[in-house]
Amino acid sequence: MADKDSKVRQMDNQTNSYVEGLSRSQTFLLPKTIGEYVESDNPVRFIDAYVNTLDMEKLGFTHSTPQDLGRPSYNPKDLCKLYLYGGLNHIRSSRKLERECKTNLEAMWLLKGLAPDFKTVADFRKDNPSAIGALFKDFVAFLKDLSLYGARQVTVDGTKLRAVNSNDKAFTQRALAKRIKVMEKSVKHYLEELDAADVQETSDEQHANSESGEEAKAFEVDKLASLLEKKQRSEEILDKMEKSGQKEVALTDPDCRQMMNHGRVESCYNMQAAVDSKII
Image (cartoon, rainbow, N blue to C red; front, side, top):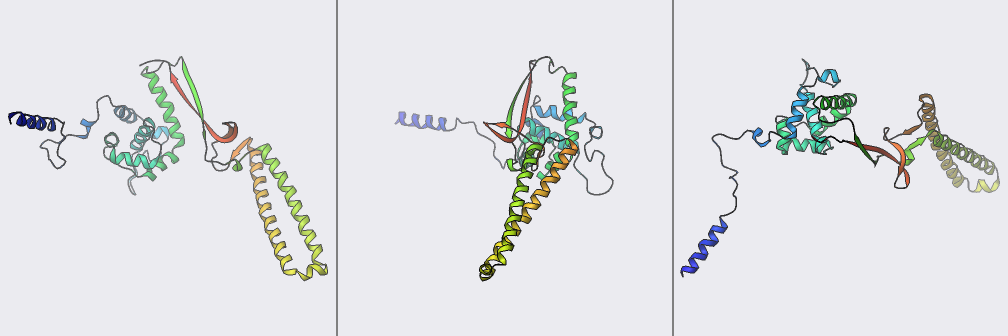
């Protein structure tokens, strides 16, 4: 009997040996601050300190000066902090960044509880492309001043990422000129078909099937009109390319380029990463 009681007590001790958390309904006399959840060496503290030193108006960010009238806008420094935080943690989606502001303690600390919606984040990127480029240059100069990299030996590697642009909407000047010539031949073919249809309409046999003949002719006319419209649009694009000296154009994603990728030509980006040899 004693051995049985001993085994029961041993099982009870094992059951209570887990590390227990706090009750979610428990209140605290001195609640923790959100800053206690962010370690002193956490990278978000570096992002916060760096962005606070920036002159946002000099870099060219929109809404750098608060307006007296209208609804207050978000401080571009806060949105810049969120943008850099997303880059550091490989978070590109505006919707995911919005969610981070509501669920991630680091992001909550960084933005002091602000939670801009995804459209605000997306518009910040869209409206400040030049300013973000200037920010990257300033950041590199900032790191050099702190001697955080050697700037003597840099290893560069790259990869190709397929763009959201079909090959049917990406042209070089040569390819576009060739496309226009093909269209011109097709236009000539359709005109010949319509002339032949007009000749046949004068025959007695065609009069017997005039209704079906009219339908066929209307179909050919619609195809011709569509082809002429595409040809005119292509000629306008080619004219702009020749005037600007642009050798290549992508209609859906203007920044991508045609390049070899996995053995075939595709619309891609050539993404590159550089690593400095200095070890901090």
